[in-house]
Length: 121
Image (cartoon, rainbow, N blue to C red; front, side, top):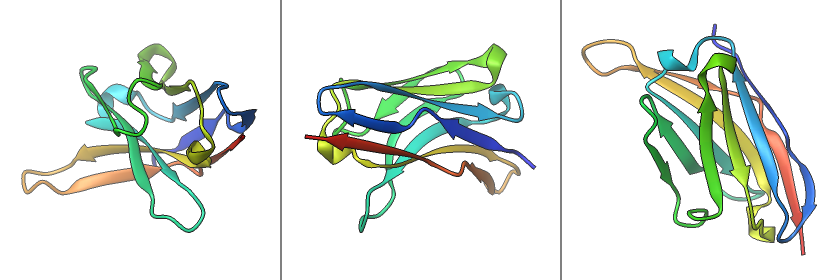
């Protein structure tokens, strides 16, 4: 069973920065993609940033230019550097890893427990 453990959340004032970490129980090379999602109170979970196997990245429009996703393969860790934080970034942030497991395209999905980020104005 794959485990993903997030850390780095906390409270910060608008304009500040935080770095979230997601440590995987297996080499992140084994996944097709590792993502960060977030869920604000009363809202649906949304995709924030994706890092594909090979290093390509993609971002939600709301965070592009402010957040950076990166990986340390030696440490089995994926990071989310969050800069210029806004109150609307307040949410629980979840790490997610996925891999296609058969020729039909079935996928194994793994989630962390989440880490809270609070941005005050």
